[in-house]
Length: 116
Image (tube, rainbow, N blue to C red; front, side, top):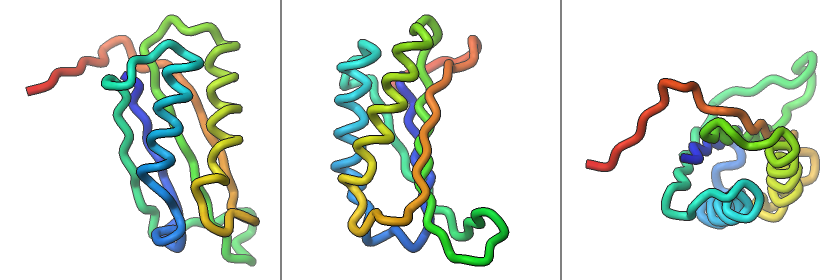
């Protein structure tokens, strides 16, 4: 736990500091929702095509989803979402105009994890 998924537009490939972003999000999870660093897992998914609004202008997008074990207060999840949203531009070269979003949600009760 936390399961962190970063979806990002393909044109950000060379501008997104993945390792730095993952480290910053992991620290935020530790600080704000009492996660343990070794439990944080991030994955990055390049999105080949994104459309914003009517699609008239090209637009880059970064969306981060953080899934946590249930039990955190809604205020803590909102604080984590705000914190991650605020730190995102620090990890994107030329972040101006990039559409940024984040969602913090509970994992389903059937979630299981193991290390082989």
